[in-house]
Length: 167
Image 1 (tube, helix red, strand yellow):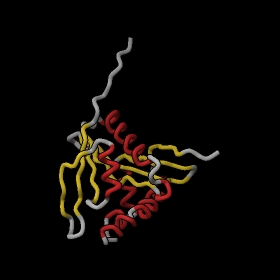
Image 2 (tube, rainbow, N blue to C red):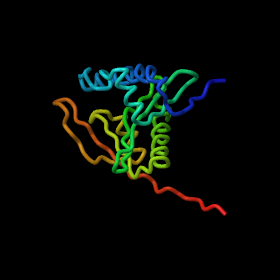
Image 3 (cartoon, helix red, strand yellow):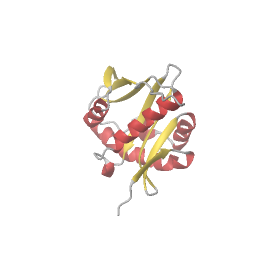
């Protein structure tokens, strides 16, 4: 019988595995844009630890191995800013990215009263764009970062929370 993937909140103890996975996952993005100096490939362990201590992160584990992660925060305007959704290449195309996206949105909406969610990806990252659009995100802007890269910003409104009255 195979192991199942579990999703849980990330802790400081997960930082090294997340950083190694991030480095692996962003290789294809760097190749796509011909730029290996992108922030996910240059982030330090201390930088990631700092990010984890000020925001919220989830990890997906297969046994003891972190095979996917997502992180973000909710800003003062109520926008859940979702960042660095990564899935190990061997685990891609099995719905894990969508599960993590749904889980972080649910956390931000229920616990931090997020009103909307926002994320970004590179203009050539078709599989990312497809995933985000499938989950209800729409393009709200684009910013040219370099001659090779434009960042596409996508957003969606949080679903209204359903309240159940108790007797």
